[in-house]
Image (tube, rainbow, N blue to C red; front, side, top):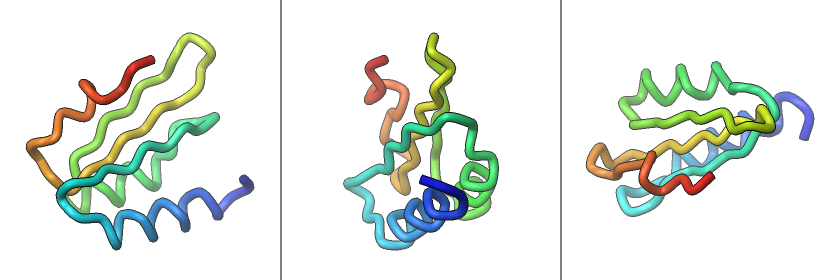
Length: 73
């Protein structure tokens, strides 16, 4: 998807997210604006760049979710 559609969709999901869910995004580059917004709104996040240089981003509202544990790459 072209900019700004991924950010718009992610923001929609974050806005409607409850404590039992998380957002998992796969992106070709690190989505710095999304990560900054998540930080500002006190969401927890985890980013990982795999061997193919693809970014895996997980964001949750619940600070007790271990996002790194959920990522299996």
